[in-house]
Image (tube, rainbow, N blue to C red; front, side, top):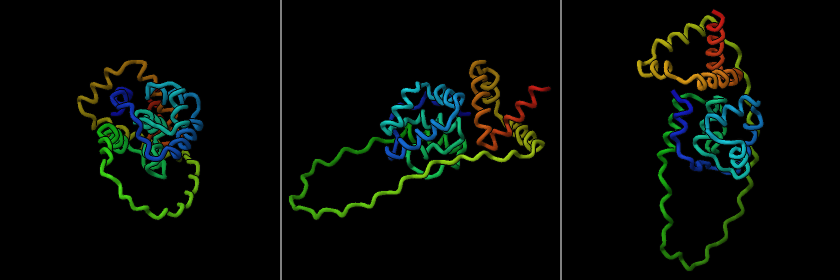
Length: 206
């Protein structure tokens, strides 16, 4: 289960593969969030608004910030680093793989000190400018059948390990409140989150 503590273990390094795309995408994603969504990102990443502003101003993004956006909005974190053109494809497995890859990424090897050839190379033709990426459009999912939702969620709960159950039982109250707020926001964009949010509402009325 990915939570705030998981993100705290991530290194604060720049993992952007295309700074111009990161500038555009982080700014659009941040401005598309309401107050609760923005606060959810800040709490998960353990940063301030100024850090987000620096990200979309300079084109830098840390694994922690990308993962926080992914958790709140259920979007592909590789979209924010400029590694993919689609926000779709989010899953906990994908996010875990993303975090492991960025944390264990090897440093680039040093440049060779060998002398360059004295021959003058012909100038390369000017590359054609790449088209500007279109803003991401995240459409809300249609609400699924609620009876099936409850059955699916119960089956997932029965599959939890003893360690996962222990983590849930000992979760601090403030973290539970935050998770519910984040889930409420994610339910607008994710079918899975919408299922869970309905089940939470159902339990609160019993």
